[in-house]
Image 1: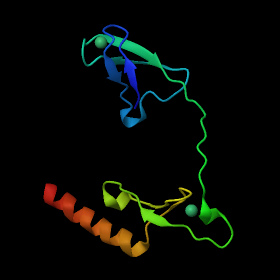
Image 2 (image 1 turned 60 degrees about the horizontal axis):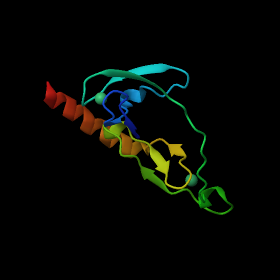
Image 3 (image 1 turned 120 degrees about the vertical axis):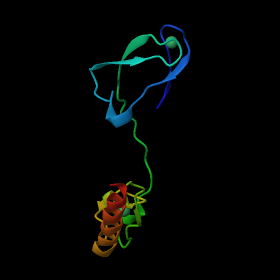
Image 4 (image 1 turned 135 degrees about the horizontal axis):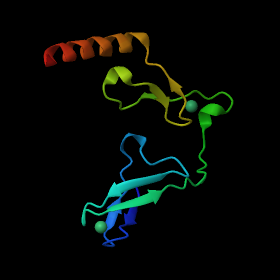
Length: 110
Ligand SMILES: [Zn+2]
Ligand SMILES: [Zn+2]
């Protein structure tokens, strides 16, 4: 996510947050440097920065602007408002279609 510096070789390294790893404050995590292959540890500090944006849909008379999320498989996607981030399930007919597609896809894999 952020480029940090390896404490051993001072090379810029990227902290690997795959699967949400390394996000708990107060925990010590370890990672291997991609360059010198030494293992370093890190702790995470979550800063509470706030980013303020207009959310017209939350104001009187406005409607949400729901767009499908880019989730894979599509059957796990939700509808998310581009302005306020509110999430809604896929419309039933869309969900059913994706579910069928996914079933067919899995069937082909075997
Ligand atoms: Zn290194
Ligand atoms: Zn909204």
